[in-house]
Image 1 (cartoon, protein in one colour):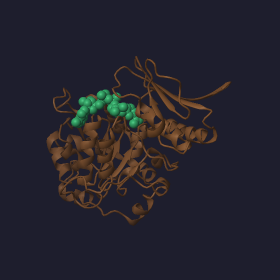
Image 2 (image 1 turned 120 degrees about the horizontal axis):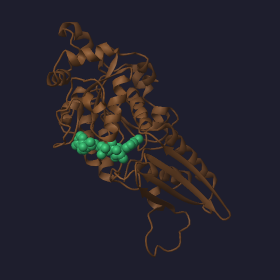
Image 3 (image 1 turned 45 degrees about the horizontal axis):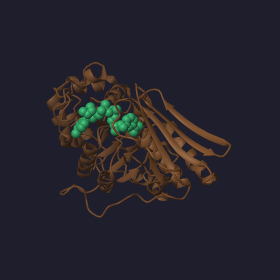
Length: 372
Ligand code: NAD
């Protein structure tokens, strides 16, 4: 797998340091935006590194994951970005490293990602953005990561970020993510989307962008939840509608969308197992005189409180017995780990909408469900 190959190419800290020390933040990012490696070496020395290499035929072969064959990717008739450059962005590398940008770098996930990427082999952070007006604008990325300075400051220009990076990781909000997908399409930049709560229009914008750029979208980047989806789909296939399915989730008090994207993805998996769609059978919350439960319904309940990172339980309830399967996340690190895996996997892939199951290599044709 492409990701594994790249992960084995270490980027020494010295290179990362040189990249940041040799050039001030703005010029580093501008240089990188022009396709020039910002590692402090003379430009002539870097010319070969900076020169985009055309995508290898092998990469094109490798990008047809089982899921892509099993489930056609959502496509829309119109291109996303007028004036878009044609084709995916060639994999540009700096000393074997994939250049990574982080949208929403001051957020809970953004900070965790910065910290992880600072130590990850095979990647080099080249920029981070925040929303206009954010107090983090102008801060060094290292201050957010709790590490030594990166020599790169937080900006608010997604156009520059997507032009500079090979891959942008995006844990922001639905409207920002839909906008960012347009920049991914325009530049052919790989886009790893963790944002949840996208509505139908926003999901369609992402699907359109995926015609021109590789996009990995997953409501949950953890190995455990993606495995749970497979288990739930299988259980729903085996158990008939005498078994009521309910999805219960709990998250920290700051979470803004409900039910969580992961709960919806689990609901989608159950619906798929039953040969239907979630849209047809979802019951998203009950209040007041809700009436008796309809047969075949898939219900959701969302709890909010404290600092809970993310708990999900799918309940299969029949007369006289109940089966429950649960995933509990105790740290955001596992999502960040998954996102870093997705970054290494996505760099240089052909355009398309991929799921975390493609990245993890156990796709069975499931589509991501980041919708709200
Ligand atoms: P957060 O609110 O802490 O962080 C979001 C950050 O994005 C904020 O710092 C905000 O200022 C920034 N932002 C907003 N608009 C922006 C813009 N236009 N450009 C750049 N930055 C912008 O939230 P969080 O807990 O980090 O979660 C972010 C998203 O990721 C949510 O949708 C959440 O549900 C989702 N999430 C997904 C996974 C997963 O595994 N897929 C895991 C955790 C969280």
